[in-house]
Amino acid sequence: MVDAAKDTIYIDIDDEITSIIDKVDSAKHKIVALVLPKRATVLQSVVNMKLLKRTADEQTKKVVLITSEPSLLPLAGGVGLYVAKTLQSKPAIPSPPQETEAAEALIDDGTEPEPDLDKNAPVGELAGLPAEDRASKLAGAEETIDIDNLEDEASVKKAKKNRASKIKIPNFDKFRVRLFLIGGGLILLIIFWFLATHVWPKAKITIKTNSVALNSNISFTADTAAKSLDPTNNIVPATVKDVKENDSQKVSATGQKNIGNPATGTLSMTTTTDCASPVSPVPAGVTVSANNSSFTTSDIANFNPTGIQSGKCIWTSNSVGVTSQGGGAKYNLSAQDYAVSGYPGVTGQGSQMAGGTDNNVTVVSQSDIDSAKQKITDNNAKAKDALTQQFKGSNLFALVATILPGTQTVTTSAKAGDQASDVTVAVETDYTMLGVNRADLKKLVENDAKKHIDTTKQAITNDGLDTASFTLSSKKSANNQSLAVQTNVVAGAEINATNLKQQIAGKKKGDVILTVQQLPSVVSVNVNFSPFWVDKTPSNPKKVTIDVQKTQQVTQ
Image (cartoon, rainbow, N blue to C red; front, side, top):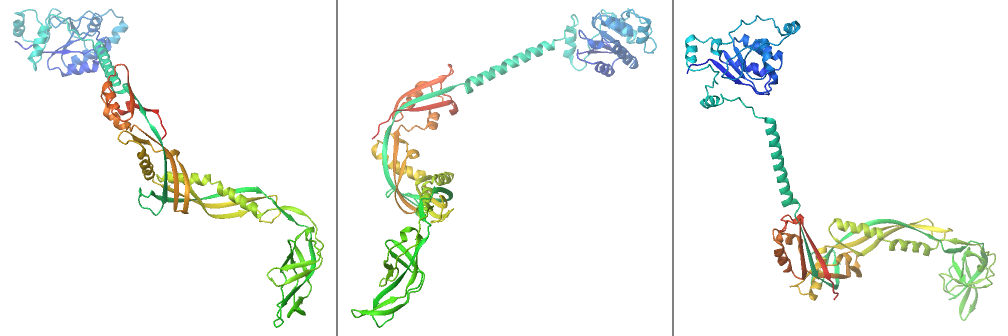
């Protein structure tokens, strides 16, 4: 076969003019057949046609447009490009459009016009092939523009097969839409499958059991010196914590004080002793009293012998002044004898006491101060809360009953005896409390409760410590106290929800019921799956709900 000395280039609908020009530049032969797709908009522009023609002229190549688009023929004719309907048709320059002089001037790019070519001449003659080559081609049939593919023989066969028909360009827009629809449908199907098998399936297992409430009463000792639990003697290792609390209490003053004028008078003192020894004087400031009234001496009493009686000397002092220790008319006493404080053998003979007047006022009594202090000590709720929180932070069980007040610092707004209508008492108190390990206390409670149940059929499900009642039996010290605890222990089916979910994962309804009914104290089992297509327990524990209901409680 004689080499046709041509290149056949297929143009894509998305190719730009620059891409087409590059392909023409890259062509190896003198004749370049450009097979255009339908609606090739890139060559609908006369400017692009002129650019293509100029490139062909600069490369001394002949460009033939293979197209049947009527709209392209006038444009190709206007710039002098050859057009053929098929690769087998002879090329020709179409008639140019009827243009005005202004339009012709616009199309004219200043290049020399191509010499008129014989419209009946074949493409080979236009390519400048020798006469003998043209004769060999004419010996067969009408000259055709063959598809030249030197790299792949299969391409040549494909081109020959398509010579009799137009080249059909696939519609990529429709293919792309179909591809998206199919892909989207597949994604939705996968999402639905995942939701239906992993997200939506749920199971609820309702278990009804019999339970027994037991009253447990035990005594134990919380001791900070103990190192480990002694279940035989019920000694539990304890920890002591302390807190300092400040509180104040205001109370009304209830004391009464007479601040009227005191009574005054005089008295002399007498005593009987052995005559051999003189009597020591009684200093001033000594208290003398009679009829529940006390007076204070203001002078020194010196004794002199004044007689002998029954072999003993009678000693009499000088007269000393006395003043009542309080104001009031009650100190106005008649002449009488007085007891001398600190001198049991001395008697005072007083004159009439006079001058006392009444003026009663309210004062702070010591009982008022003590009462306020006791109220603060009894109101230890803040200290209890603070200490309980300390034990919770240490993961210990607080024994609230063991709280004890320690050192107290008391300050008052008025002292006892001060005239005031009320008094404010502030107390800073150090409180202590004991705490134990809950597991140790739980073991003592469960040991007592197990004496009243069949441990092969029942287990302790609630130790009752959260609502237990603790009573302080004795307190040896802040570090060692004995207590009694009363709890309501619940015994019933011991169901570990986590383990049970693992046992029933993936099982059908009947198998789930059989598995649960084997647990102690189980009365009935109800299994519900959702949605309606689910027939097995989900393997994800979060999708399984276990509801244990106690149907009966009997106190023993």
